[in-house]
Amino acid sequence: MVFCKHRDCLSREERLRRSYYEVLRDELDQFVLSYSLVGSYNNFLRLQMPYPFVELRELKPRARIPSVEFDAQNSFLIIFSEDFIDKKHKKYIRYFDVNKTTKDNLLKHKYFPNVENFNRNLKFFETSEFFSLLGSLLPIDYALLIQRNQRTKVRYALTHFHVRIDWPIAEASEDLARELRYISKDLYEKGDKYAEDIQKKFFEYYGVPIMSGGRRTAAIVAAQYFRQFPGITTIYVSSSESRNLLRIDERGVCKSVLVKLPDSEIKKLAGTAGITQNKFTKNYVVARQRKNFICILNVKYDYTSHALPSEGGRLRELNPDTNWLTVSQEHILPKPSTLIHPPIPYKMVYL
Image 1 (tube, rainbow, N blue to C red):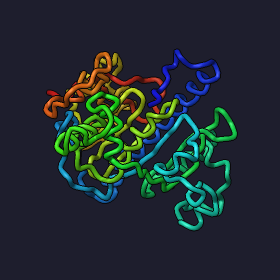
Image 2 (tube, helix red, strand yellow):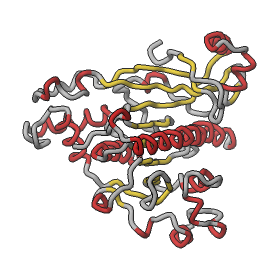
Image 3 (spheres, rainbow, N blue to C red):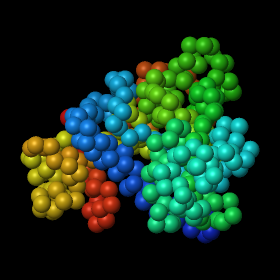
Image 4 (cartoon, rainbow, N blue to C red):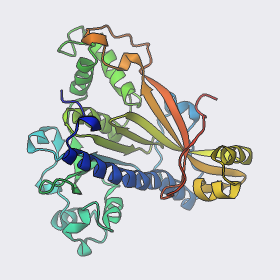
C-alpha cells in the first residue's frame, strides 16, 4: 500500500505540481457544485416539479436513505487524479483508445453536441472552453477521467470518458480492512459473516448506504483503488437518488446539499459573517422559494478511532455496531463562483 504523501514530504517540483492541482481542484469544486445542485434545482423548476430537498437525517452517518430516483437531478462521476495512470492499471480502471477524448470517438458516440468544432486543446484544464466540454460529457454513464498529461509534468486534461471501475467490491473492502488491521490477509479468513460485515463497513467508511446505486458504488471503489497511488485523487459523485454532491479526497468525505432557510436564519447567518442581509443574499442565496432562501450546506465528516489504523498496527476485531464516521464541520457555502466570501459555520444536522 502506497500512502498519499503529505506536502511536507514532497520535493519542490512535487509541491509545485500539488499547488497547481489544488488550484485546479478549487475551480472544479465550484463547477460541480453549480452543476450538481444549482443546475438540478433549475431542472426541477423548469419542469414545474417541487425540488426534493434532502432531509437532514440523511446526512447523519449510517443514515438510511429512501431509494427514490429523480430524473431531473444531474448525475455524474468524475475522477481527478494528480498522477498519470499507468497502463498496468487498465485491468481495473477501464480506459482505452476507444474512450479517449478525441473528435473521432465523440463523433461515434454523439456525446459532444458541438463536436464539429472540437479541437484537441479543449480537453486541457487551462483552456477557456474546458468546462463547456466537461459539462457536455457529464451525463454519460460511468466516469470521466481527468489526469496529468503524460507528456508534461504540470498539465491536466480530461483524457477519457465512459471509464468503468471494475475492481470488485470484495477486493476493495479487503484492502481497507487490511489497512485498518481488521484482517491480516484475506477477507474471508474469519468467516462469511465477518466478511459481510466488513463490506458493509466499507460503504459506511465512504459515507454511502450499503445498497447505493452504480455511480456511488463505483466512486467508493475508485477512491479505495487510488489510495495505492503516491499522488492525491479527488472523486466527485452526484446521484439521482441521494441528491447530494459527495466529494472524496485525501482528507476524507464531505457532502453538499441544498437547504431551505427562513428569513430569521438568514439574519443570524449575516450577523455571524459580519455582513448585511442584502450582501448575504447576493453572495450565499442560490434561489428564493416564497419566504424561504435556498443555500448550499456542506457537511464534512471525520473518522472515528475504529476507522483509523490500529495503534501499533495490531490486529483487532470488528464491531459492526460502532460508528466509523462522525460529523465534524458544517458550513453554508457561498454561491459557486463567489470570490471574496468564505463558508459560514452553521450547524443543522443534529438540531
